[in-house]
Image (tube, rainbow, N blue to C red):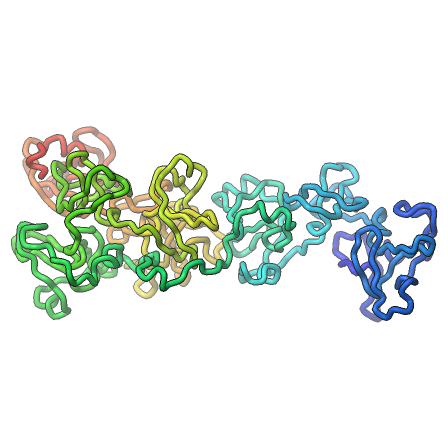
Amino acid sequence: MCKEQIYSFHLCYYECKSCDYSLHKFCAELPKIQNNHPLHPGHNLTLSERNQRFKYNFEYEWKCHLCKSKWESFFNYYCETCNLSMDITCATISQQKIDHPSHPDHQLERMFGRIVSACDACGEKHDGHFFQCIICPRYRIHVDCALLPAKLLIQHHTNETFTHSHPLTLAYSFSFSEQRARFDPLCRMCGDVFYEDVWIYKCDKCRYYVHVHCATSKRDAFMSILQKTGLGKTLKNYKDDEHPNLLHCPFSDEGDNLLKHLFFNQKDVIVKHDGEIHQHVLNIFDTQTSLANEVVSLHDPMKKIQLLCDGCVKPITTVPFYKCSQSNQHCDFILHEWCAKLPPEVQDYAGHPNHKLVFLPKVPRKLLGVFECRICKLPSNGFAYGCTMCEYYVCINCAFIPEEITHEAHPGHLLSKTNPSDKLRGRYCRACKYSMSKDLGYHCPSCDIYIHATCALLLPRVIRHKYDKHHPLSLRYEPAENHISEYFCDICEDEFDPFKWFYHCTTCDQSMHTACAPLILQCEQATYSDDEECIFKFLNVKFGRTLEIKGLHSHRLAFVQGIDSHGNCIECDDKLQCEMIFKCLECEFAVDYDCADLYVDSDEAS
C-alpha cells in the first residue's frame, strides 16, 4: 500500500502465505474513512486506490498534498470537499513507530512534516522526514538513514566510482578506542575523519571504512557544495601532448630515479671524468661482455650484492656505468652514466635565489663529504650542488625537483610543487600522514591532496626481498584486501599503520615499512623503525669506506651504519644503533660520526 520496504525493525507486518503480498501492520489496519485526521481536520478522508478527480484519466497521476510527491495508481486518502489527496505514508505518520538497532532501549516514531535538521546517524544535515526517540527527543535520524540496508556492495550505490569486492556492514558507532587500534583510519571515499557516534559502513574482511552518506551517495545537494572532492575515480585533467616531459611517479624500481629521466638521453652533454669528479681515470661498462671481462656484479639484493653509485647513491642495476680504473688498488668509485652528465651549476634555485649553486663532487670541510640536504633533510655523501659561501648544499636529486608530476596514488591529475609554509600546517602528506608545513611537496588543487616530494620521488613502485625470490613487494597506498588483522614489518618486526604507504606482497602476505625497505640487504643485523619517517634515514649515504683518524684510534676505521651489537659510543656514550658510525676493523672500538668529526680538521676532511 505505501510501497516502502518492510524491515526487521518494524514492529510486525502481515503477509499472504499463498502469494507475494505483504502489508505493514499500520497499513493493513487503516480505516476506510478517517474523521478529523490531525493533518486535515474537519473533513472526512476516504481510502481509495486513485484520485476520483482523475477517474477518466488512465494515467491516474496525482500529487500528495503534504509531501508533494507524485504517484500513479497508488493508495491514498482523498478529501472530496477540498479535492486533495494524501498518500499512505503521510496519513499514517503518527502510527509509524520502529524498533531500531541503533537505539535499542526506546522506540522511534516518525515526525510530522518535513524539517531541516542534523541527522544523528550520518552526521549530515537533511531536508525531509525524520524518526525521533519518544524518550530522548534529541536523538533524531533521517528516514533514509533509518532504512539503510545492513549490508551493501558499495559499487551498486556509487555508479562504480568507488568499488570494493566485499559487502560492507552497517555499524552504528566507531568508538575512539577502536579507531586508535586501527591507526585512526580516514573515510576511503572522501578522506575525512570519523566520529565516535556516527554510523559507518565497514568491511568485515578488510580495513575498509566509509561514511554512510559516501557509501550510498545520499548527501543532500545543498550540502555537497560544502564538501571537498572525493578520492574515487578522477577525470584526467591534463593532455599528454601539452606535457611531453611529465614525470610519472613512482619510479619503477630501485634502479630508476629522477636523474636517469633527466640526463640519460642527453647526447650533447660533455661527460665529466678524468679528474673533474674523481682523481682516477674512469672506465665505461656499457655491455654485458664488458661486465664479464672485469667480473663486475650489478646490484642484486636477491644475492646480497650491493652496488651503489657514488653520485646519486642509488643502486646500479643496468649498464652503462663508469667504474674507477684503479679498482685493483681498492678504489671502488662507481657512477651511473647519467650522473656523469650533470650540469656545472644550477641558476636561480628557488631555495637559494641569491647565489647560484655549483656542482660539487664532494662537499668541502665535511668528513667523508657527508652533509645534510637542505631540501630532503637526509644526510648524504654523494654529489651535491651548493653555495660554499653560505654553506647551503642540496643532494643532486633535490637540485632538479620538477614543478609538476603525476603519481599512481592519485592518477589522472597533475600535482604541482608547493613550498613549505605555515599556511600548510593543517595539510598532511598522503604517504606519511605528517604535516606539509616544513617540507617541499606536491599538491592537487582540485582535490586538496598533498604528497611530500621525498615520498613521491624516493619510494619505487617495486622492491625485491631476498627471502621471497619469486614475488616482488609492491608499494601500497592503502590496506590490502582480505587483510583485517594487524600489519607487522618483516624487517623490524614492529606493528605499523597500513594507512601510511608500505610495501606488501599479497601472495606471501609479507609487509614492511617503506623506511625499512632499504635494509633488506642487512635485515639480519640491522633494524630501523621510526613512525615519523617514510624514507630510510641513510638512503643517500654510501657506507663502507675505511680511513685512519689520527688521535682517535690507532687502527683503520670503517664507515658503517650502527647496529645494536655496536653498543655505545666510546666518546659520548650515546647508543650507536641507527646512527652513522666508525667501527674498528681489528677491535671493538666504535664511535659515532659527530664525535669522530671533532678529531678531523677541515683540510683532512676535504
